[in-house]
Amino acid sequence: MTFIDSHCHVHFRAYDADMDEVIKRTLAAGVFLITVGTQKDTSRHGLEVAARYEGMWATVGLHPNHLTKQEFLDEAELEPVKTREETFDMEVYRELARHPKCVAIGETGLDYYRIPESADVAQVKEKQRATVRAHFDLASEANLPVSIHCRDAYGEQASLIAEYVQAGKLARRGVIHCFTGTAEEARAFIELGFLISFSGIVTFSKNVQATARALPLESLLIETDSPYLTPAPNRGGRNEPWRVKDVARKLAELKGVSVEDVARVTTANAQNLFRLPPEGV
Ligand SMILES: [Zn+2]
Ligand SMILES: [Zn+2]
Picture (tube, rainbow, N blue to C red):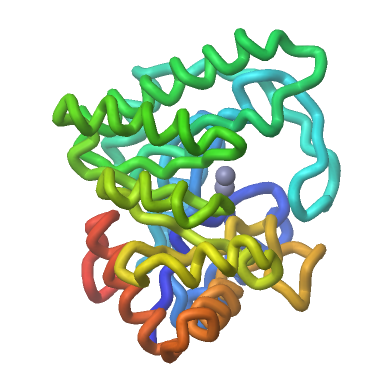
């Protein structure tokens, strides 16, 4: 049985002391992984790490939370996150996207939940929209899928994707990662050819469980978003990518299928979306 953690950040500082052990532990557990870039430096570093392992790939992008300088507690409340402000540099990301281990552009998207109180809200939203467009242009040009991060903006996010899809762009489509919306909101993305990815939140949120029950397995991916969002019953600590099996187990329970079925279908979905070799190399 093979699982794919379609979205983690195993190359982040939270793993400074033991990153290689965590990756080896994950691969030994039959879990392949895609580590996701959120800024220039983390995007570059993710590719360097992925290049050292079979069964590991990376994405490059600029997370919406890094468009403004701010400080907040991350989901796992490990410690306050201080972000540096960065503006999307097309030339830099275009170069990174050529790396053979780069399988998607992102994470990018609209995050209207986490806008600093001191900021000009309209201005921040406009910068987010412009940055998403730049990622979509790059993904279209590089013929790669996109990894979308979206909070409190599913409707607007779907419209932005629809605009590109209708223009014949984003041919490789993409995934809405860490989905927490309703089944109806998910269907808007599925109709545009996108996949929906569930994180450890599905192990404890009744609303997300209801959404997962309503969607076909053929449209789903699984992820951990490590180091964040540790699944129940271990919530709060640092997450690790092999825990994607907890997400798979919960999905199997919710949908009344076997864990093998969840592993087989979500792995095939990830291989198709990211064009991963079937043997994982
Ligand atoms: Zn995210
Ligand atoms: Zn993430």
